[in-house]
Length: 113
Ligand SMILES: [Zn+2]
Image 1: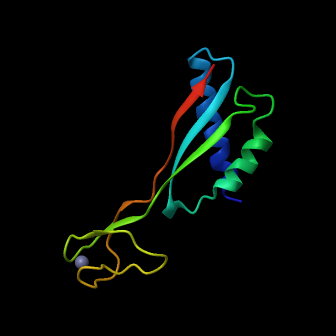
Image 2: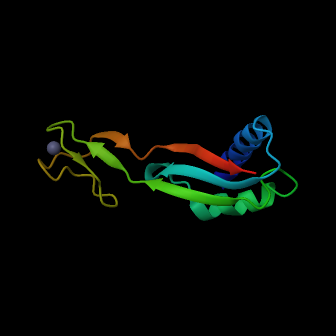
């Protein structure tokens, strides 16, 4: 359910930029979503189809670029992609680390006509 407010936010950003650009229609929206955000592509798509009719973004295609979670080990500095919930540094065995990727969520670009 938490995809509803962020889809509304996407709509606000996209329609504002499309209007600024003098566009008649948005044909595509390119989104970047980090795996740590827990946002689900299908849910965003669902809410988009609910919210977009009658707006500049009606009929636009959503493209999702997923960013894999990456950690940097606090003990040895190794960067690694955790697998599932196994957040253990493959180099030294320390647990977790600083998140360096995976929390992204933004509209990368839109395509308009
Ligand atoms: Zn380490």
